Length: 385
Length: 229
Image (cartoon, rainbow over all chains, first blue to last red; front, side, top):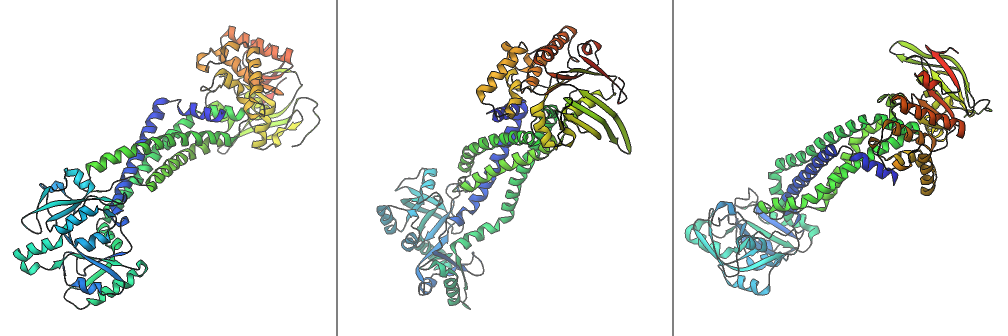
């Protein structure tokens, strides 16, 4: 118990200095955790995908629609078990700041393809029977206080006019990765209204969600689907749901790289601060280290004392930082719930935080420990005498 | 280790020490021959820069000579590696410094116990020894005090107890009264004298103070790195 006691007493010899250093580490670890969680949240859409689902879109761009009759042809491709249309709606609920994704879907096949959206049989039936019905995720319903039967008006931006829906169901995600911030309604309703106001834009969909029976053949089936529509007026591009989601992430990749770089720069800065603290600490104690060595303690023991102190401070700061990361990310996630529907600290982030604290502790102690171990006893003793 | 039969506890032959500063070689000790018998109490005296502290450091094994031999209890310590020297010091040398060099974060008790952490003694044995050592230097009632709660004289007593605790072959003291007032210095010198007379401890002490030197059994003078008598 002697060594831990000595390390502890040494670490808190300058309480203010040690406390400020720990606070610095706490802030760095929390900031690191928060930034990593932001990056994770960005990728979470891709994480929550299924390898048994493909997305078929217009090969020119996502903004160009596909004919609705493609569904039948896609369904005939070997390996395809189901097809559902999905169309981005882009409506506004009261104000633009209330953003949430809205999709017009083929309700039956779409809900069958997404078993992770858990909806009661009664609510599912009510939704399927009501062409003006809508289904929303639990978090979205809680955010606006919606209840079953509520009338929800959306102001169309892509499709003008006010669209009023009746809430028929609220789904729960099967796990924490499932987005509970979405709004689904009948594609048939959308198409019906478009026929009235823009007849030439009718019978078209944004993307097709395609369910396949062999995820291992996703690439081959994708090629087969695209081959069906080759040289047509609307050629298709089929990819896995994950690749489709990552395509969105790629649009903001530069920002993500910058965020990741900043998270590591923060760790580098605190490493420099910590190294300075340990260098000052060791320099002040050269005579004590020399005394220990004169008494018979080895160079390694002296180096160990410095490493243990540095690691101790870094790990205390790291532990507090990790503990604080949870409430901070919760508050951050709540404030930006419409941007990041799922915002949770991952196990990998916690492990990286622990790793960063360890690395900071070790690197900060390297040079001071090496110097203290190498200092000649007579020179060290002269530091006082 | 080159072991020879111990004619004297400390046997120094043709010892030299020099420092290199740039292109210059500065001799500090030149051709020193000195014997210290077991149970002796020697005072090394001389003006500043005469090399007395350097000689003490060499005898204590915290510095390496440039030439010559130092045998302590039959061991040629000049031939020992750094690791071997550390183990040798732990077993054979007790240090008393001018500024006490106590660990400020440890109590008097813990400071005295420090050298015993390097031994295989049980906790109970260590505590017994520390209790006895602190009683011997008259600080049994101050064992839970930290150095900054003790006077200079008391701190030096703690340092003496620490030097004694592992029952070393040799005690080296570098200006042990240099930072103390006259009355306290006398008390410390009384204590060192008692350790020498009553416990038979071999003491090599560096001092500027003729009064302190007068307490030693033998005086050795150094001038410009050479023994003058």
